[in-house]
Image (cartoon, rainbow, N blue to C red; front, side, top):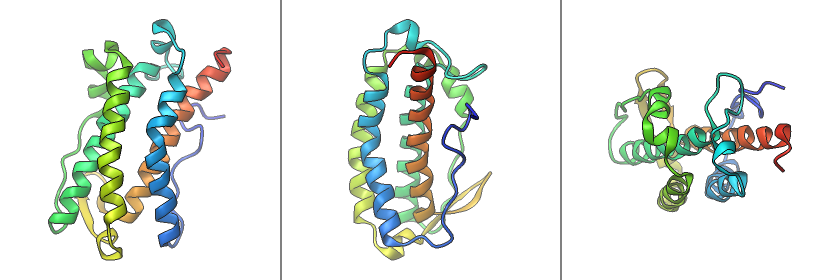
Length: 174
C-alpha cells in the first residue's frame, strides 16, 4: 500500500452529475466527525507520530485540514461572486511546519473544521448548476471548476483520515 496515497489519487468521473456532487457534499459534511473519530483517544506522543516515514505527524495532519479547507471555502466564495478569479496558492508544507501546527492541541482545529464545514456545506448546497460550472484560476493548476473541486475536497478529507486510521491500524492503536 502507498502510505502517501492510501485511498489512491483523486480521479474525477468523466461526467459529473448532480447526484455525484450531492454525494461529495455529504462526504464534506461528514469529514469533521470522521477526523474527530480518527483521533479519539490518542495521546500526545501518538498525535506527534508521523503517519509515514518523512510524513507529517497526526497533529500536523489535523491542523492541515482546516487550513486547506478554509482556503477552499474562500476560493468557492470568490468563484461564485467574481468571474474566474485568480486565487493565491499557499505552501502547505511551510504552514504544517509552523509552531501551532506542530504543537497546538488538535481540539482547536477540530472545532475550526466543524465551523468551516457548517458554512461551506451550506454554501455548497445552495449552488445552482450554473454556479457549479463556475471556475477560479489557480496559478499552479489552471482553471478549476467548482463541481470537480467539490470532489477533490471530498477525496481530501477521506485521504487524510485514511492517513491517521492507517497509522492507528499499523501501530495497533485501534
